[in-house]
Image (cartoon, rainbow, N blue to C red; front, top):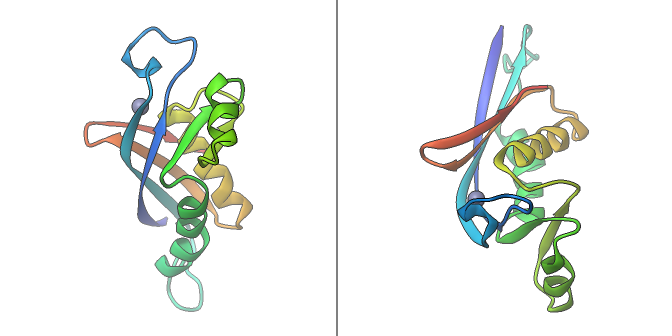
Length: 133
Ligand SMILES: [Zn+2]
């Protein structure tokens, strides 16, 4: 089995609702989304996938949809307030944890046709969450 991994850096803000800890307050992260793609065969170029394809498909999406945005739960009262102020917000159906954001990037990679096997979201250099299909 072959695999290739691409890291995509971005910044985001969030807070967790129904949560008793400091992450209930607005704060931000310099995050890394680590995208792993596996295959037991190589393409005619002798690659699992070209790194530049991952960059083109996924980094552009992350830059456009998540980078320098607040990622908030749909019923967070701040969502409407920030949107009314013209601030960029990405809205999720559930709490924007590292686990949920890893799942989001995984789903986006699949939607873009990449045979992604795993996405790890590094919230800090010592804290990360992984979603693997
Ligand atoms: Zn956080």
